[in-house]
Length: 483
Image 1 (tube, one colour):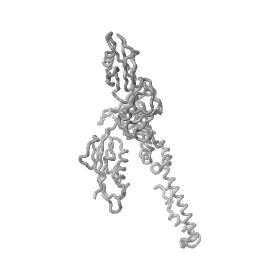
Image 2 (cartoon, rainbow, N blue to C red; image 1 turned 60 degrees about the horizontal axis):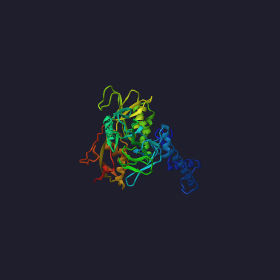
Image 3 (tube, rainbow, N blue to C red; image 1 turned 45 degrees about the horizontal axis):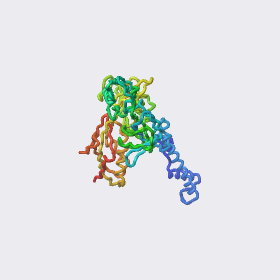
Image 4 (cartoon, rainbow, N blue to C red; image 1 turned 135 degrees about the horizontal axis):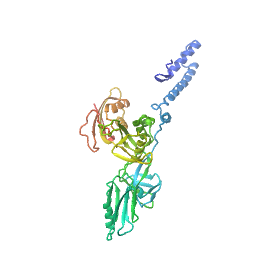
């Protein structure tokens, strides 16, 4: 078997000096004298040029070999390699903000309509699709009296449940509105009388609800949730209640505000990110439920930062509180509804879903199905990294930025429930990626309170429960150059 080419140990190419030596040996044997004797001879110059071209062919062959595999291919070759697993690179996407739009009932928010934040600089967002804001899909509604009638029934139906007040002969508008306010007893809504109206607001700012009114009532305004996308791709972060400016006038649109968590966008997925997610995503064809759910979520739901899936296949509640024969998804980022759809699509019949977040999705026959999952509790981790310089080689001038970047990159890939082991997660990467380091000592401080200040850094493992996720940022990383 040849020592070169595709071998059991991978591809081994011939170097230029080896090719040159082999050609000299063959020609020397054929001509009967040593062709290496005169470096400036015609044969030696000709042979050197041929050897260089042969060496280039070996290098091309090596590149072709490595371009076939996800963990060695790059750029377009990586895109081609992962197609065999049915995976594609994630394209750049904008950040989506669900915006509460207060409108006259029936107002159409047109696609392309622009709003902006009140920050400096302002961030502009554009409406994703034509959306009609109506009482049939409201988060908040103001109801007023359309016709003042004595001994009449004034009724409000919320999601199919009817609440009524029968007016008396002496009742005015204020008495009727007070009667309606007292009649609505659903604790999923907040009821308040204000400015000649009854305001009904969903307790959950993310839900859309259905309203039906009797003919003697009408709406003053309806607030519905409309999706807007940032004009730029990537994760655009804005605090709640900062998107309030209407840039494109729309008849019937009264105000806008952001109250709901955004769905993070992203830049074009890099080679490093794609390789990191490749293994998790290829399980979308798996017959195993947990792997299939996780892969479907990563592939089909925008804005996911991390996901972990657990199962209790016993007949009793397990030590983490999961119901018997249930699956629990702990997921950071993404739309609640899109997450629920993927879980419903991939979970096995007869398996319950467990979690505090509940979303209703349509079942196989259109019936309402409740899907549950959990959002992780953040554990904020501070890092103190003390390094000792090697005497054999110098440190690069940007060693602080390089170490910080390694920690941030590794922490981004941490799933919920995974403990932080600095020696395995971080120090090995620093030793391998940054020259000039003789010794590393990493200490941590962690807390569920992001505003807490480190009191004492300690060595060892950072424990994380299944429903927690460790996070950090650049401000929580300190790099110290020891003696």
